[in-house]
Image (cartoon, rainbow, N blue to C red; front, side, top):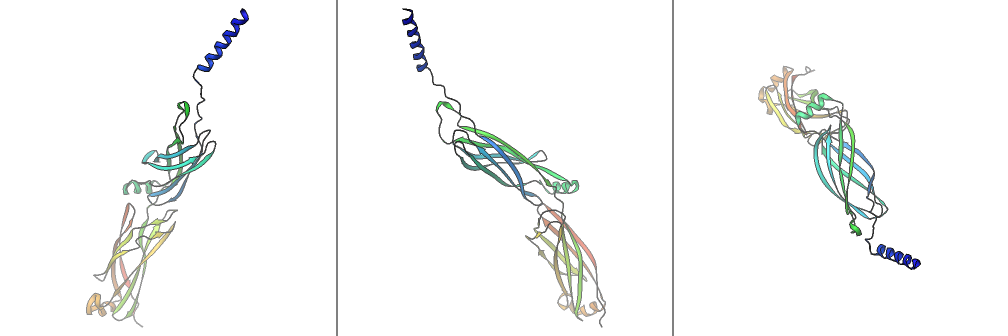
Length: 283
């Protein structure tokens, strides 16, 4: 009788186990296993930034759908955004992603001038989250999406202001009634990166007559730590100064003035220069 009772209790326990809820192990979350940030290029106001990383999935295939990010300069958020990625990661595998953005680290001209005075470097950072979703539904209510945090920083050189100067000029007399002068305008780029300029506005006056106005250099790039030179050529003759030009040239001295401005992103620097063209006496 005792043996029969024990067999009945064992059967009852087995029946209870079969009819109870099935326990499903929770799926392991994907991981961001490495990340890096690179400053690809830099300009007076912007930098091209590239953040790369690798997502590893455990037992489920997932998709890295998008990245929400913030661009931070010296602790201040300058821009926030979101970028679609759509990168598939196989179950038990890995996949790389990259986030490339052109980001502005300068607010305005006043900010740019303050940076020039300050010198040194700026700490830039990209931080945010990757939105990762499972590619197929899971039994047992396992999570279907995750947010993986990323954050990396890099120092960039603080931008320095370019400067416009009249480097030198040269002049020659081609006839008793004609003189040609060439003015060399220099744009100094003190930065370790290429400087793009919007143009140089200029106006040249010789002996009281404005001879030439215009804009040159639009879209030009000045090499790092160098000076770009732009030439403005003017001619003094009867067309510009009338019949008294012969007498004017015989005086061997022609006063001149140049006004203008260097135009660069978020920055304008005026130029005013004057002097005297001294001609050699005729042989």
